[in-house]
Image (cartoon, rainbow, N blue to C red; front, side):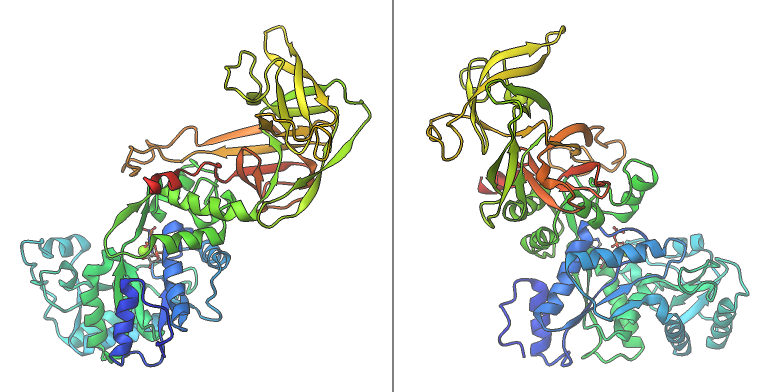
Amino acid sequence: MTENKPVSSNFIQNAIDEDLKNGKYTDGIHTRFPPEPNGYLHVGHAKSICLNFGIAEKYDGLCNLRFDDTNPTKEDTEYVDSIQRDIKWLGFSWDNRKFYASDYFPKLYEYAEELIKRGLAYVDDLSADEIRAYRGTLTEPGKESPCRNRSMEESLDLFRRMKAGEFPDGAHVLRAKIDMASPNMVMRDPVIYRIAHATHHRTGDEWCIYPMYDFAHPLSDAIENITHSICTLEFEDHRPFYDWLLESLGFDVNTRPRQIEFARLNLTNTVTSKRKLRQLVEGGYVRGWDDPRMPTISGMRRRGYTPAAIRKFCEEIGVAKANSLVDVSMLEHCVRDDLNTNADRVMAVLDPLKVIITNYPEDKEEYLLADNNPVHGGQRFVPFSREIYIEREDFMEDAPKKFFRLKPGGEVRLKHAYIIKCEEVVKDETGKVVELHCTCDPDSKTGGKTANRKIKGTIHWVAVKTALPAEVRLYDYLIETDENGSVPSDFIAALNPNSLKVIENAWIEPSVKMTAAETHYQFLRKGYFVVDPDTTPTHLVFNQVVGLRDTWAKVSQK
Ligand code: ATP
Ligand code: MG
């Protein structure tokens, strides 16, 4: 039943609708997300997750999680665990359908024997270099291996002995027998099994031959009854082999999986390749896979990006058939949009300058009511007393006329509190301003007689006595790029030396006491921040999420 479903919004859904109309896949739509556990997931994978789980949801179908773990030397259970955590955090569920390609090793082996028996695969003795040399080029056909016409019996015997561990790595491979003159290089007798005496993170030393991705992937899809195998564009040339393999092994065309390619996500200023991200981690250029500057899902989580914002972003960029570069400010826009409605607003001073309110009693302390968020409401108390911190940049000694914050003899409103006037500037011997002496208008706070007095500037502050010390980490892009935002191939040389700035002595209002990691705030006038997992009850650590200014909204209105 698809009549009541929303209108297809992209070419993948059109293809699925077409299949359903033609009477294919009558048992329902079934997709999968197939990460290789050789690194942490990144924002590109988020797109693939949203797409695969999203399509399953849209068609009341199912989406499996499958670890594509056919490459034992690069894979690890640390990655298996992080991948599951990240998918759940994004808000998707594979229910009880978590699979591993390695679970299918016995079955895949049987399929390989089947191909040999049908005369569609052979064991080759050529070395990897020779196979490459024999393959030909885009303009020249390849050359057949001398082993190509060895008997089915001999290939079967050799393949079984490969499995039994009789040969060293590289001595033989199993190849599909297709066409060495095919214009598609993938179809020139691709290698489908190789010898690797390596310990696998799940099957241990049980196997010393491993299937190649191009062989394992279509068959894993077929074994799981996947209907649509959605992958990125670079696999387009591999589709003929995908179909050849399933056809050769007799899978029914009306039920067997169909591969559909889409454009991978590329983001400005951002590296989206596990290999490169691993280089950043292993080279010590970042603090780990979850460094807030990393475009990994765990990095984005630590940075304070929310699952809702990332899902919204994936929805907004849509799915295309051609590669393109998406502006990272669009992702930031989605994050800002979400936090604008969902993060409570508090006051924090990142670069403190002390202000003494000389006409305010020394022992007095009052609690002022402050709104948490204009959308979802809520209020809290903010303590006020004689000594406060303001932002150093909110005071200027030789201020131009248009400077509406604090200046000698000038007035400014303290958010949620009083209007104060700067009476005296105290400097140290070097001439640096160390303190301001101000007076306050006692009737100027909310509800007071002069509450509506017109004052141009409003600044944030915290009371010295009650403020909590905090460490605040400010971030910039990890990679410096040209004006188009594309990452240079030598991205290590383009690392931004100022991508992290740590402020050790910021002050924040006490309402945030005891909040735990992943709580979001807007620091008034400063941007969005999130509590970092390094936080303890006695040491607060915040990460800057995004600033308040929306560069994307500006770009998209042009
Ligand atoms: P990487 O190049 O970062 O190693 P990969 O494609 O090798 O990525 P896999 O673990 O094999 O990583 O990917 C799992 C799924 O995520 C695949 O279906 C892949 O096509 C998809 N995927 C990976 N990168 C992107 C991206 N940038 N945009 C969209 N989908 C992606
Ligand atoms: Mg891959």
